[in-house]
Length: 402
Image (cartoon, rainbow, N blue to C red; front, side, top):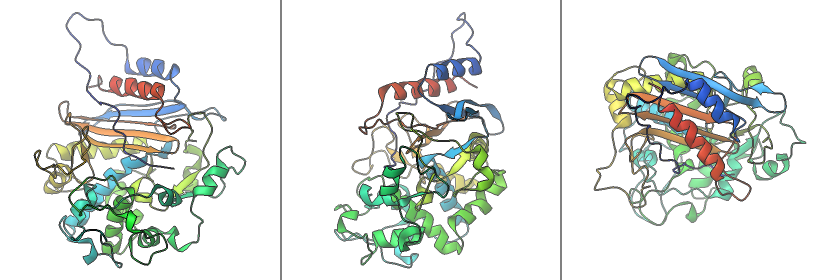
């Protein structure tokens, strides 16, 4: 099991229609046609401005066996799009005076985290830009997944998932416990190889564990669970009433089943390191969040101050001083919000059975999102070119909505 940042789509905007060209079909007709010939079980999309939803709809099926439709109120995990919420929470914590981006994390944490190969303390800024030198060991990181109670034990993917997932009740089955065991000397899963040999701040290494650690800083300083902090400071103020970090039986009837490339359903799962990719939400709820972000991107205020939004979105690196290994497609970063080469700002998400994109486009002043209950990769771990192309076509169609 592996969560990653998806850099394979160009995410370019469509060109405006020229005078005299035929009128474009209605977005619903076009998207329904794209779904009909796609391999995606279901998906939902939204396009928003800073003040209203311009378009929002679901297509296909949330549960193939039950023939339950995928709607704008269907909830599913959105993978690393979750990190955009971590970014907002960190800036809120900065506004509350808990720390700043240059605070050394050992001044906050109740355990030691330091690169054993190189001198220099790790800072909050390095966590949010993936330059902390913390490396994900994929075998160990797989144990951050947990099978939820009531999952179908007879499902075709249950045994494989059970083999790799964390056993509830172990000391590392909590966010803080997992991080301490992985990152602190003496921890059961601590290895020197959990850190890059390059010094903190010198190179880019996408790290889910480093992202979860950033969220844990908020938990430590606030004295409340990260899930409680985000509900109080983000979800409730924005009216995101169906957004959770953990399974909620009250939302079970709206939960999407998620599928591998062969159409097999994964067992319902959660994440011990839940802030790095465990956000479960609907396109209806997430569009509320994105509207607030578009407003903040363009100088407004809301759940953050104007200065807070500036900090959230401003590039952390000068163009001529990018860290070694920075991805060509998204070379710069705000506070967990990735900055694409084409100027768009947001995040992608991928997890077993799910794919999600959410970006702000400065040129049009809009934000758009797409979430689907399947994954790009096939059994061999390689991206399925057909699914990638179908996802690209849907994403491009959203760019035509103003």
